[in-house]
Length: 193
Image 1 (cartoon, one colour):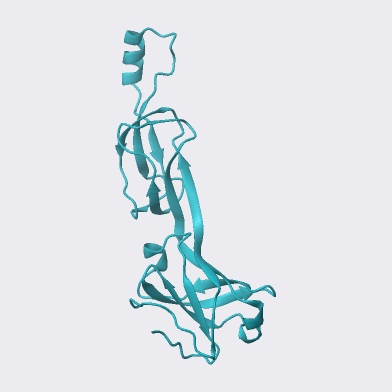
Image 2 (cartoon, one colour):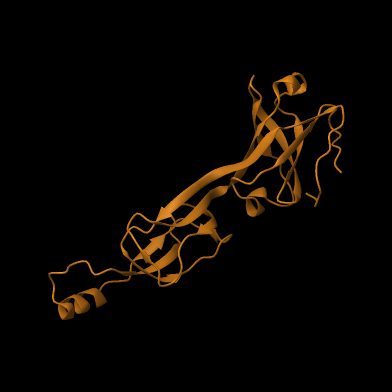
């Protein structure tokens, strides 16, 4: 992984027309109506399944109860917590402290696990030299990575997996981010500018 400017094409190279970082994003809903008391996590923070993301103050649930009775009943209950349903990395926090939220309102998004990949589209005229297993240079978010083609179809759609690198791509890349992908047809050389 190196900081890099842009990929330039040479005759023995193929550059994808379009490429995007992909990953499994899990949207986390509040699960109850109420007010956000405290946001426990920050974006880009690693979380385990069951970790508390948001602490809530529950909305008044039973208008038929007198306020004094409801207050004593509510005080005996633990404040609702929104917990992570999966292990991964928080990629987005959608609420702030003192914000009122609904039961199904998203409060956070988590990149599940530590896996991201690239979906690329190559021009059909460039497919002759491409095959699964070939290495590719990938630039995304100003960083350079190495990946390999896992599969490619007759229309030019391809899936590329990142190879082991000193920096885990899932730690720095977000799904939906654009990427540049260049495959050197005379492997193993990769020409980067």
